[in-house]
Structures are given as structure tokens and as C-alpha cells.
Image 1: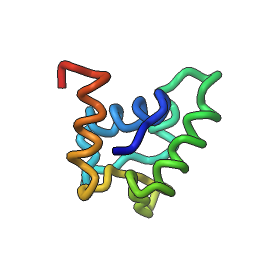
Image 2: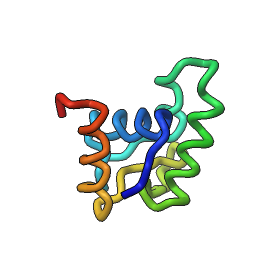
Image 3: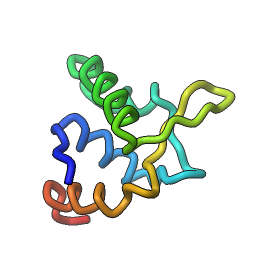
Image 4: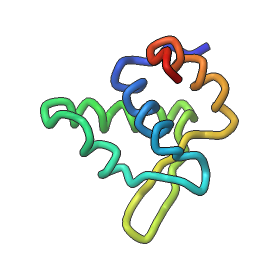
Length: 88
């Protein structure tokens, strides 16, 4: 089981909430824009770390780089999200 930081959980929750699995994806710029301005640099770094760990998958689109949740890691991510967001 991987331990996620609060920033990483926030990113994963936003993607989960918007159903970003495979075909559904979100531009990295839009992902970062939903967080407070003071935290956006940390969020961008956390997103890159999640990509490096394999929890997020990068997808090129005509508008720029997009990301979605790796379907192979879905169960693990869901269990971690349920610990923080019990209403899922």
C-alpha cells in the first residue's frame, strides 16, 4: 500500500470525482487550477510524482498534456481515498 500526501490525495480525489479513467481525462492545467494559488506549485510537483509512481497516466491531447487514473491502480487508490473521504 502506498502512502499519499494530502496534495496527492487531493489530486486523486479531483480526478475520481470527475471520472477521469482512461477515455475521461483532464488537462494538467485544469487539474492544477482548482487548487489555491499558493499551493499550485506543490500540486504540480505532486502530480509529476504520481505520474512517476504510475498512479496517473499521461495522455497527449490536442490542447496539451492530460492525465487520468491508472486503471490497474484503481482499487488501491479507492481504498486510500475512502480513508480520507468516507462518503465515497
